[in-house]
Amino acid sequence: MRVNELLNIKGKVAIVTGASSGLGVTFSEALAEEGANLVIAARRIEKLTEVAHNLEKLGIKAVPFQCDVTKQEEVQALIDASVKNFGRIDIIVNNAGVAAMGPSTEMPVEEWNKVVSVNLTGVFLCARTAAKQMIKQGSGKIINIASIYGAVGDIFPAAPYYATKGAVINLTRDLAVEWAPFKINVNAIAPGFFPSEMTEAIFREPRYLEYITKLTPLGRVGHPDDLKGAVLFLSSNASDYITGQTIFVDGGWTIW
Image (tube, rainbow, N blue to C red; front, side):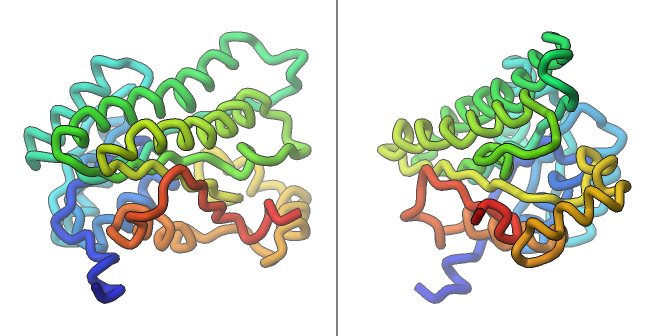
């Protein structure tokens, strides 16, 4: 099979969570640009509807669906919406995430629980609920969004974020083993520093930007386009023999 055939996802059906802004929009665009139909999910339905409208200009169908990934019944409804609209799910990108910054000694346990609920429990619920449908179909691609901070520490105090993103990387490994017999590939993408709502405060500070670029071997922060190749690869037949892996898209940050 030629490379362009291996990377072809035209007509596939993908779900992207956390798709109302930031990296979720980038992942959705990457899949839509290559011809995949989408169900995009987040809690902010107005923003989702706007994103869906823009995606459909690319010639695909995009369904906005309001969903809190921490609630099993809403996650099930999301999966059901994909099957109702398109008959199947080929790809799910588990991107929804939050962060809580501050010294660990002063971190309210409510903030810890919120981050764990979205970043870890949410990924688990979406992955397992999608997997049930994919098992019926006989194949599927699950892509969990981790972070460089799932593998390293740093000066930015955000213990629940670091902890959950590390857990996502290991959860990816376990689910890959569990679902390999069903031809379901489970992999992760670990972005470095990219512009988003979550990183807005950091990007506003020149001293932080200087710190980031100095420690990044490629000498810059990420551009949204830098993530598109990774999500396309993991969504396509080109990655059929890859599972349980994490691709770090970080300009070399985690080399050190």
